[in-house]
Image 1: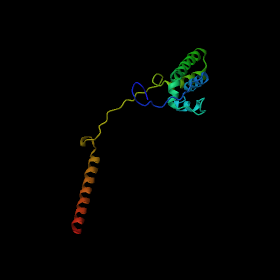
Image 2: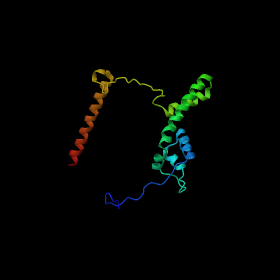
Image 3: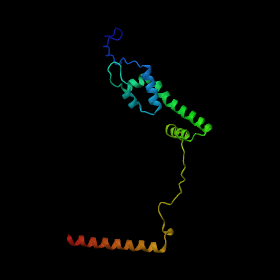
Image 4: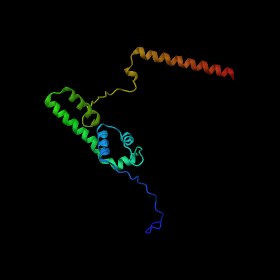
Length: 158
């Protein structure tokens, strides 16, 4: 029991995990490569248990590497693009453009604006040809005849 509150102490929830430099470098490299945190957590093993760490442990101990890893990759791509533009290397430019479009799409995307033409949803009788008007009238007549026959048959059955 705690002396101050008089309540039971909760059991220790920390895992006792301590990140190594090698693990930090691995997390950073995986984050640069665009690997999801869920997959990164599966790659990092606890020294105590030898099993993969949880996502919570990953975020608790490697938050800087996760954030900075993605930014470092983008910075490298921008640097590669800049150097390749000056040197004329075609493959490096293609790779850098792909990286920037997929990782930083809000900044490096090809946005297309589609114009929508206003169209009248329901045609009016004035816009129809005489032939179409005649088709509509004949269809309505057929429908009325059919309904009358159905009503007559229903009346006979009663």
